[in-house]
Length: 115
Image 1: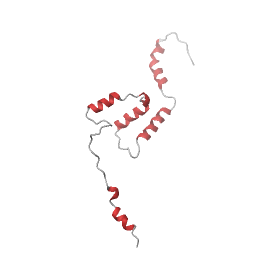
Image 2: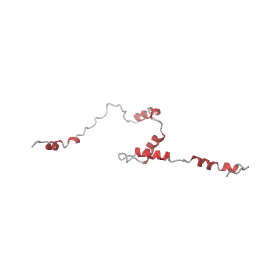
Image 3: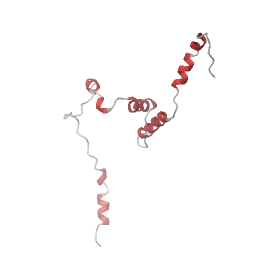
């Protein structure tokens, strides 16, 4: 029930409370989207993320700009100036080829011998 009062100072005292009530989410859809994003980021293969890193990735995913509006130039420049290699670096150490895949080749050839 609305009561008309001439003393509006009492209503102004309640303004912070009314503002807080009006900012409470009516549905849980936003939090459900964040949990869904978290489940996409933290997988069985990426389960060792720290809370800080996970929080940063969630922030970027949920609040960050769309990819077509993101301007990475200043971040790339900072990355390279701090001593990291650029993506098109050709003078980097060669990657060691791992032949573990073929370590059982001799044993497998025994199974293929005709008797």
